Each structure stands twice: as structure tokens, then as C-alpha cells.
Image (cartoon, rainbow, N blue to C red; front, side, top):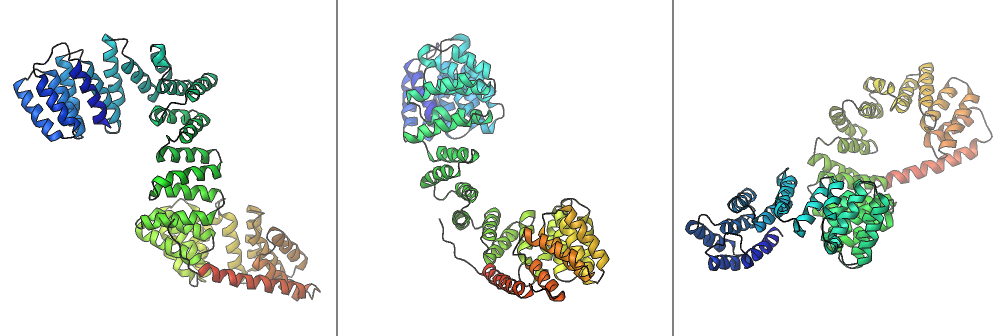
Length: 519
């Protein structure tokens, strides 16, 4: 792309040489032919010899700059173009080449935009009617956030040049940058009415539109490109992301799928598709995209982690376990992956397997209270109550984890028959989060052990109102009815047996593996 743009300037240079005409037109034409044939090595040899013969020729240096740019030698190309303009201060083609070099290589030079603007302004210093230098100045000022100056440059263009699609695109973005909605809308309508713009005209303006709250205009421009068949895969992906930002997940997924037709093996695009499918509540679809991404990049810890998260939502425990395990293997210091792996291990036959992952998470995130809570829960499940108390105590003092930590502390105290202490923990838990069903179940059982059946029933009814199928809530209510000889015991026991059977089925489902085919 860079070489093509610079060759245009060289062709103009041969047609109209600078003020000090070079005495070697045939040699330069031969070099030009070699460049057009993409034989830069031969062109370099010709031009090196020409420089030896004509050391003061600015045209030779301009040609050599094009060769260096084509070979990716940014600094060398810059030096050659600068030499050309020093030898001939009004050498327009060399200034244009400098400007294009800087614009194409902005990622390598933080000052590239400023230097490109200076090159174009140098042309305008002696030729105020040069349309390309004027337009490029406007475009660069737009990218630098100097919207008023950008509009000022556009106003100095001839009327026909101001009405070019690229100039209209810069105009609408500059107005948007200044918060001038009516003017931006008018410029957009004029551009869309023309229907002749292409992706190169609008791409440089999209970032400005999005940054200043005019995603609607960016979407209209991209949709028009798409309708006319001018939208490339990258444009469709950007359009999909804008639709996603607007909450239009069906449209977003459609556009991203269209982008994937040209790039079916793009992992970043597959991850975008997975995220949008998930937002559209199609977790199975998200899993398909992630399965394809995993097949393409089996060494990506992030892909394995996201795949595992989708499996958790689909209650595919074996696949979640395997994916998180691989994510941790690939990136042992990924805090989220360690936490997820520990959480999945808690639901397997040996919860002690979760301990090293939660320890790692706590090391990686020492200020995150979930680490202490997770370690406390894991220790509780393996009946290491001393460690559980040690870990849960600090978590109980943090508002983010107080409800869960006090709930497990209540269960530990009850297991030690310290019912009054258990009651205190359970009350603190429901106070911290009244909509959390677990502590109401525990509170009901503690009241039952303290021989306060009325309060026990009230707590258990609160639990089941929050979660009618709560396993322990239904178990404890069955126990209460049994001990108080309540006539509702038989019906409640049947209900509990149904919940127990479903729980066994769910546990079996969580452990089963699945096969995922690439998307």
C-alpha cells in the first residue's frame, strides 16, 4: 500500500521534474519500470549507481526513498526524502512521499502525525491551492482531535474538492467531534445521498464518531458500505461490535457471522461471536464458537477459560473441569482460571482438590475477600473446621463476603453443638443478605435444635419462598414436621424425595463429558 502511493508521486515526478531538472531521465525511467515490476533490488542497484554519478540529484534520493519504504526501512526512507527536499525546497513529490510515509507508519513513530502534517503544510506554504496537501492536513488534524482546524482546512478546498466523499466524511466527523449534531447529520446525509464513498473514505472517521457518541452515524455509514458490497470483513466486524454496544445482539451476531465468512479461522472474531451469542442467551451457540477457537488455538489459556465458563452455564462439569485445568496449566498465574478451577472442584467427589487452586487465587489476589472465603468453604467441605474458621473469620468481616462466610461459620458452630454461637452467625448472615436462601435454611435448623419450632418454621418458609427447591431448606422442613408430628410431614417428605432424586440426576449430568465440533 505504501509503495503504491509513493509510486504515484514518482510518476508525476517523471512527467514534471522539479525546478532543477535531473540530467538522467532515462536512468530514472528504467528505475521506475523496475519498481512497477516489483523488482526493488534491481531498482536499488540502478539508483545507487545513479547517486554515485549524480550526487546532487534530488530525484535520485526521492526514488531511493521509495525503494527503502518498499523494503520497510522507515528511517532510511525518511532520510532520503528529507535529503530531496533539502536539495530542492519546493519538491512537492518528495513532500508528498514524506507525508504518506509518516501516515502509513504511525505505529512506529509517535510523532508521525505531526511530521506528516508539517510535510503537507510545507507544500501549502508555497502552493496554497494543492488539494491533496490541504485534504490530508484536514484528515490529520481530525485524527489529532483538532476539529476546528480540520474544518478550517476543508473550507479552503475548492467547492468540487470539498464535495468529495473523503472530504465529506472528514467534515461530518469533525462536526461530531465538536458536538455539532445538526451539522454532522447534514454532512452524513449528503455523503449517503452520493452513495459513491468506499471503505477508505470512512474508516479514518469511525473512531472519532464512536469516541464522541455518534455510533449511530458510524453504523449508518458501515451499513451503507455493506449494502453496496464495499464492506470488508474488518468493517463487518466493527459494525457487529457497534450493534452489540447498542444492545442489538441478533443484528450484531449476523454481522459478525458475515465477517467470519472471509475469516472463518480468526480467533478474535470467534471470541466476539461467542460473547454476542452469550449476551443473546444462546450459550450453546457460544460454546460452538469457543470450541472452534479452541481447536484453532489450543495453546490459548483465555480460550480454554471461556470455554470452561460456557460449560459451567450448561452444567457440563467434566468439560468445564478439563478446560479450566488446561487454562491453569497454560497460565498458572491467571487468578480467574484458578478460582474457576477451584469452584468446579468443589462439586466433584473430592473437594480437597480445590484447595491448591484457591490458595493460588488468594496469593494472586491478596486483597480480594473471595480468596479467603473460597478457602474457608473448601476446608469446611473436607471437614477441616479449624482451617475453615481461620479463613472464614476475615471474610465474615467484609461486606462483600459477610453473608456466605457467616453462613458457613454457623454450620461449623452447629456441628460442634454450639447452637447459640451458630444462631449469632446465622442471624448476621441473613442480615448481610436477606435474599440469600442458604442462611435461612440454617437458621431454621438452629432454631429447631434450640427447641423453638415456630421460629424454625418461619425461617424455613422464608428460605423456600426465596428458593422453593432449596435442598437443605426442604430437608430441614421435613425434619421439623417429623419432630413436631405435623400432618404435613408425608407430603413434605415426598417433595423432598423428588428434589433429592433430581439433585442426583443433576450431579450425574454435571460430571458427563461432551463432544464439541469446530464451528
